[in-house]
Length: 259
Length: 300
Ligand SMILES: Nc1ncnc2c1ncn2[C@@H]1O[C@H](COP(=O)(O)OP(=O)(O)O)[C@@H](O)[C@H]1O
Ligand SMILES: [Mg+2]
Image (cartoon, rainbow over all chains, first blue to last red; front, side):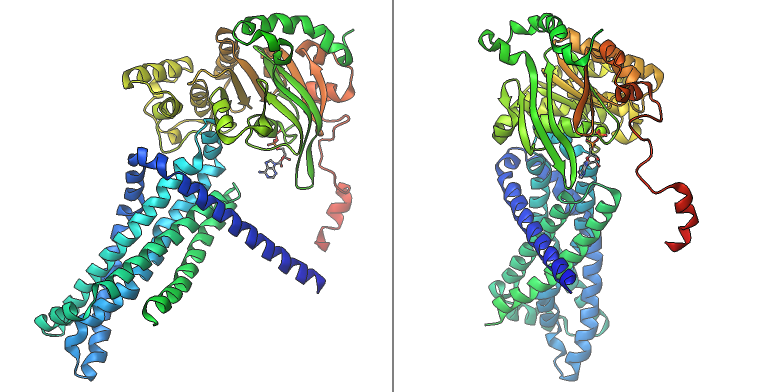
């Protein structure tokens, strides 16, 4: 009994301590911003690594999600004789929810896990210590460009996801199921509000980008430098990032659309 | 007969002559204090329950090759990390060139590190850069050189370790020994005043072993470097070192010139230097008798 209380306490302390380390790391990462701006090439390389290389999975997923939305939406809406609202439904669900959330989940799996493994292996192979010994701060040099690349890539990927998703919905709704083309676009144009829908979606995806990249970098940097340590850290990145994204999505949705 | 207790006096004249070359570059007033480039006093360090250093005093004399030997797992790598400020001592004082490592700010520590080279056990090359760029890395970071000068400098450094032809290979295409030599070229790229070698001999074939030992000696003597070689290879290390420290169980077990240490009559030092399986140090990790373990294996 006492043992289990003690181990609960230990786990709690460990969690708080790692939360503290994560915040210290974030401060260190942000402190690297000025030196990164002097050398934008490092940032560009990481935007390529994290963003461009994630494009394929994001575009393909977006297309399928949009097509499914078109099918399901048409099925429900046509029961109420409101099939012309399909465009609004597809666009709103993508821009507000599915775009940011699904993109963040895919981004955590595709780019976040790769980030953790890369940083963890750099630690395990003493590359980070090597940088330290060459008087180069590994946080500023290695982590900062990756962090800002994640922050830039996520909203762009989410926007592409939504755009391709709308095309998928249009293809199924208008192309296959015979919804009126003009109604599809016209209703979408009049009902989707820029501030209310689009901007809130962008804010969401920006926050998810920060959280996913931060978790991935922290797990890699904080890993125990062994192959087991790196593999566990990679798993933790995907699990923690997914939970954080879904939990935050509820909070953000309640704040943005609740009132 | 030389004994360990008397070695500081016997060595003092040799250290004197060894440091005369560096005296002209250093400030003369602090001569006595800067006799040793690195001074460690009363060093204590522990990892969890494990005491790694328990009151260690040592001096790394300027301009010489000092070897630190000991069985693996005694904390040789840890000592180098403490000296370079990657780890903080629990208690005690570490001074490098008169600066106390523990009290330096981050930027002061980084400034000091540009004058230190360290050769990691694994090489620690950046895997996303090729050999040339790895050696160029510290130069690009800290010396603003025109590209043509930088290229020449890097090629000279690579030539010195015999790997100019490998300049465009990636680290994953190198053998362990080659990676170590590239790392050596990188460690001396900024012409440091001190260089630390962590197990430079493991994984080297006899030819590169020979070149490496002479390279370490040459670098040390030609450019007035101070070298610290950490190793558990007794013969190679004793061959190039001017001064030896043997550490075990968190303490200095012996120190002196290689000849003095080799002539030691301490049973422990004898066992380490001659590589005998039995003696004061046990090869086996403490365990119950083998018969007992084998007979009761079903219990587990
Ligand atoms: N990151 C670490 N965390 C915990 N213990 C460590 C770590 N690194 C080394 N140790 C322990 O410290 C001791 C000394 O390690 P090290 O300095 O690498 O030994 P050596 O280089 O002499 O072989 C070893 O017993 C090792 O288990
Ligand atoms: Mg070691």
